[in-house]
Length: 146
Image (cartoon, rainbow, N blue to C red; front, side, top):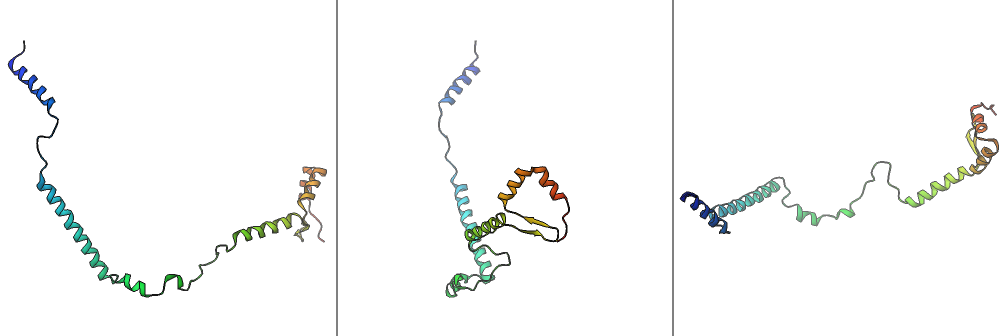
């Protein structure tokens, strides 16, 4: 058997479940003060920055910049070496041509040590004919001075 107090609690909880909205309106005074404070802080910040710009002499930088020569017309100084390539494709083609000339020609690597370079095709033929061990053995033997 339920007591009267328990019945009241049961009815009260059923009544609470039916309420689906706020029972009070928002307080307007704190919202107004927040808006006024935000405006005042923004005005103070603008005035502070404008004062600093005038104090440092940059308050009139925009109008005088328009009267001077454009930055493009100013004489340019070259940066220190190494400079960027002006023609990278042409430079790359030139380097490849130089390396191909070295790979496909005869010449001295070190004349006093008796070291030469031969065309790459001929070097591969010699390795096939003589073997890898023979080419490594000839590198280790000293050559006579010419």
